[in-house]
Image (cartoon, rainbow, N blue to C red; front, top):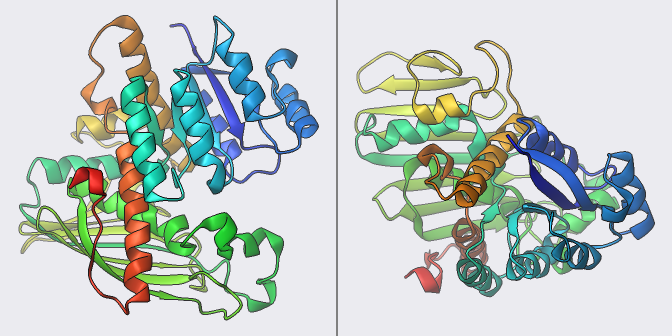
Length: 385
């Protein structure tokens, strides 16, 4: 099997997210890391890329140099990952799509709804993949939750409860630390901080597993540390187009919470509960029945879960392997296109540009609602109404 060529923008030395992408992209042997513009400092980016094994002539100083260089090559990259600061996602993603590259963009895909609408249009016009890295949807048992709900195990979904709360920004004495302060700076984060950073993961997960989209919402934002312009805690109530009621809490000041991404789904016939910090177990309780523990990797799970399982039962799987499932999906779809065949249906559920657009619409709807003391507002992008 010939490897696909992969390149990365951002994710340089010391990056939090870069290693997870490189591990995920390389895990299955689907991609070769052949090109990169990894740092805002051109020399540092070139040096680090070469230390990671990228050839000198494909270790670029910035994304524009990479776009020009790769566009001129017959062996151009098949997929570009954009892992740069949030405010740059739109410009870079749009430029690479327009030049005919498949793109995986870190979330949030854009800073505004209008930019999100534009990316959806450009991706459609180019015929290229624009995926968004809601990487937690790559976990095996998250995909099994989706399969259980789709086949009707829960009956009609009534309530979804999503959380993504941690306490890593709770120390007021650290509020001016540059590594933290930028997250609450509107110039760098846009209209929202904690919800745009973490809350949209939880909201995307709610839609991903239920197959329903958020129609309207009511939000309460709080800046519990007074020097912060943007929120560090948020509560969002939402209603979905399939009738489900949603509750979402996201916080950066929840002392004692390490990561805090959890999802619970309650339906007519039973309930499901999953936590990212214990990803190998999914708790299933049939109505009037006992709690059952579904273990990742056990027999008779769904095809979606089987495809996303990497190691034998009882061994831990983590975030890089969830990312690897997103990359595996993209590799399958890109290869199917090259070979003129249909892709494996289980590989087609990766998060797409329209999911990035819906998330940005939700961010701005939350901001509008919070400014109006929780007034219910429409959360559907105009192009999808």
